Image (cartoon, rainbow, N blue to C red; front, side, top):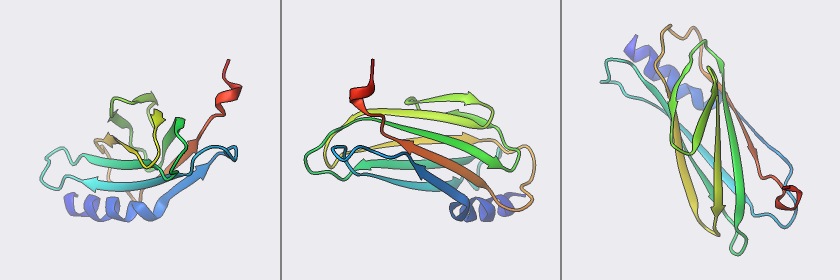
Amino acid sequence: MRSRLSALALAALVGIGVASAPAASAQPSIDFKYTPIVAADDPTFRVTWKWDVSNRSHDETAERIVLVHKIITPDWKVSGASDECTVVDDVTVQCEYSNVGPQQWRRGKLWTDPTVENPGGVQLEVTISQPDPAAAP
């Protein structure tokens, strides 16, 4: 099972959907990079996804970036996530990053301890949004 999970987790990068909410023109440009990792020597076969979210702008601060990660397939449950994140339910994690300055980045991760063998690939969906600061109450 270990080698099958390794191959499937590395192939998971192909199955990641990324959606971005429309941003106002004054907001910075955000980059997102996702990397699935399997700890091959870990007896729990933990699968971890790490990401970097960065602000490519040279002069605008990203006041608030929200990432929502959702495991679509297989039936694996989220075991945990980094401190900036909240486990919303068994398959959903929401992460918020505040005040990401020009040319700065933030990192995060989530992990799952698979209880069933993956029958055909991992599919994870990520939604990135930058809420309009002027719309906040």
